Image 1: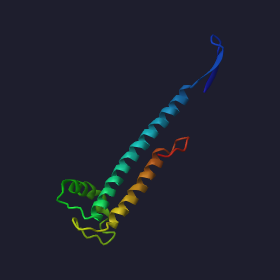
Image 2: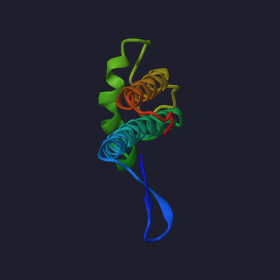
Image 3: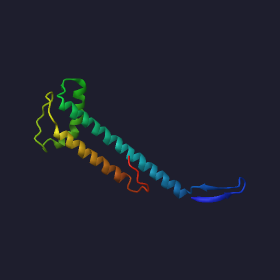
Length: 127
């Protein structure tokens, strides 16, 4: 930061130089990217959480809201279907361990992407 004496007003003035402005702008862009990643990851995990609750209570897939949640979350849960003995039972109350595992995986992936996006930051802030 450049410091100079303002003779007219009788005090010192701190003025950021071009390099510092550029660093601040880069950190701002890193923060924005981290927030976007966090928003996307959080939305996916929230939808998966809704799916888990709906399956746990045996929500009727013929209902428009339940059907919407089941359909929109299927691509995120589908890669994990073979991991545990998954038997689709929509409309019957069941514990979807696959969905819980997907929430954990997407949570860890989100945290990893945020760390990668903010790897050059000076301050260690979490989102």
